[in-house]
Image 1: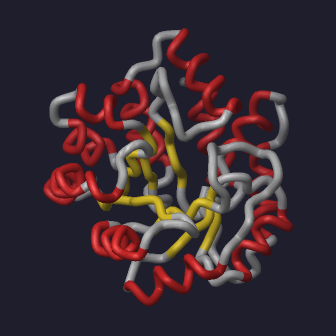
Image 2: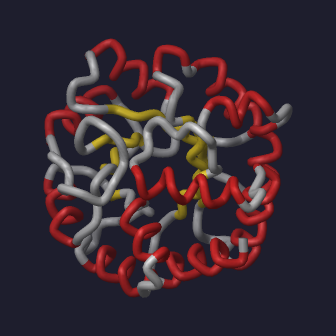
Amino acid sequence: METSARLLDAAAEGGADMIEVGIPFSDPVADGPVIQAAAQRALAVGVRVQDCLDLIAAFRARHPDVPVGILTYANIVVARAGFMRDAAEAGADSLLIADVPALEAEPFVREMEQAGIEPVLIAAANTPEPTLQRIAQLSKAYTYCVSRSGITGTHAGGQFDSGVIDRLRSAGAPPPVFGFGISAPDHVRAALCTGARGVICGSAIVDMAQRGGDVAQFVRTLKAATGNESATQ
């Protein structure tokens, strides 16, 4: 976990406006090979939910002004009684449960709100209008917009469709940010040109860290591409 702590600090040093911490799961269906491999490495050395919550608490103690969101899967949340409460006490601000669709999210959202955590839901260009309206109603921190279908990863930066941004805005959704396939300044600029309020970069940072790259400088480069906009990690 010391390596993870250093990487979180590096992202904050590079100017990340928020940090997303993934809690590893054995079957991360929304994640590509980079994040899957990272999850397997973590699980292989015995990383558990409490370790991740302790990581968040320590980060918030060092960086009290940098919000932290959790990304994980439903089994992790359901298996730990009081997960929402514990996450809030650790300093998490938001939670995205990647394998819970919007139409099944309400019970989880209620628990999050009771614990003081803001729910995040996923929207895509092909999300039906009734579902998108539900996403706009339930999401609170921001709306995670997938830039392409499939899984997370560093390859082929996304197809940044302004249509989903316009639809979310009309529905009164929280600020939309683009994820999936963000790995270069050009991707950041293309995403923001749609009206998105930021981007989420995960796989590229994990890959760079695995190769021993300068994460702070990489985040700094992505942040510079936002101009006056915000960038999220």
